[in-house]
Length: 156
Ligand code: A4P
Ligand code: MG
Image (cartoon, rainbow, N blue to C red; front, side, top):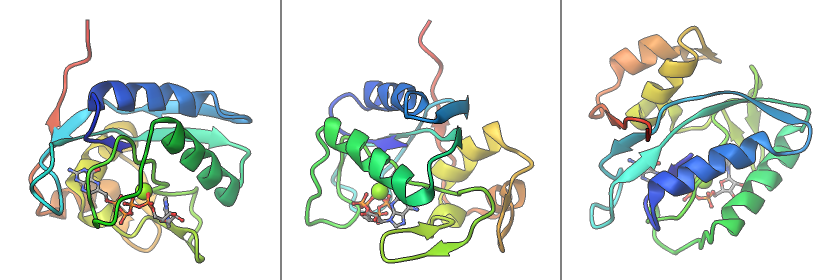
C-alpha cells in the first residue's frame, strides 16, 4: 500500500480498513506505516507505505480488480509519468507461493526484492516469509541497498 498525495497517512489507513472489508477476505495482519523518499522522480512528495496480509478466497485476478476499484475510489489518476505521484497504489506483492506472469499480473511483484519500503514492513508482519525463488524476506531486507524507511508512530 503506498501514497504520496492528499494526506498519505489517511489514504493508507483508510485503504487498510477497506482491504479488511473486501468480500471473502480478512486482513490477518497489517504493518506499521513507513515514510520514505520517493523512488523514481525526485520532484514529488515522500511516500507513506504499509503492507497487509490477507486471507482471501478471491483469486488473484479478482483481487487485483477489487484493489483497482479501491484505488479509483481514492481518486487515483494514472499519469503518463513512470513512478509518478499517486493518491493510492495497491500492489499484490505475493499470492501464497504462486508464481504468475500474465498480461495483467506479475507475482511475486517484480520490485519487491529491491525495495526497502516493501521489505521492511513485510519483515515486521512476516519475518519467516519466503519469496518464491528469491529467499527469505529477512535475507532480502538485509541485502537491500536502498535507505531504510522511517517507521511512523501510530496516532494515540
Ligand atoms: N500489475 C502487474 N503485476 C501487478 C501486481 N503484482 N500488483 C499490473 C498490482 N498490479 C500489477 O499498475 C500498472 C499495471 O500493473 C496494473 O494495471 C496491473 O495490471 P499501476 O498501479 O497502474 O501502475 P504503477 O503502480 O504506477 O506501476 P508500477 O511500475 O508497478 O509502480 P510501482 O512499482 O508500484 O512504483 N517510492 C516510495 N518511496 N514508495 C512507493 O510506494 N511507489 C512507486 C510506484 C514509485 N516510487 C515509490 C513508491
Ligand atoms: Mg500499482
